[in-house]
Length: 148
Image 1 (cartoon, helix red, strand yellow):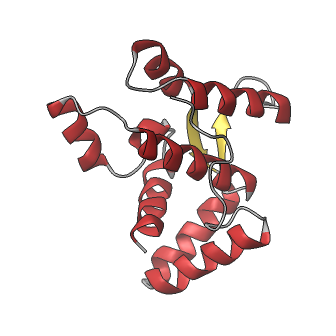
Image 2: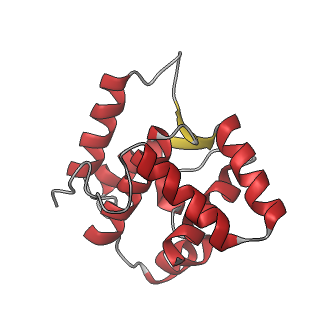
């Protein structure tokens, strides 16, 4: 259930602005990384990429991108680049910082209903059901396997 709360936290963070995946898993953890210089490990990176893939696939989030993009080919390229470049290194950090995620109208409606309900278990299960319906459930992972 903790992972679903982290998804909700990122939705809430993005409801009024755009943020990079470097903010995934909560602001407090980001502060600890900044203070102590903790690197982003492979597991965190895979979880963050899987999160982004899932929420984009179901239409709850998008990537702020010029024109009407990213196209499916450009999106594939973005995920491939991120899977090959660690955000703990300068070049990878710049890459991971470049792509800003935003909450779509559909995602905002879901988040609003979740917040009004006050029932994290119910809406967590609804989110799982949506993922499963789009074939991106938690039984699947490493849509773009991290290679570092």
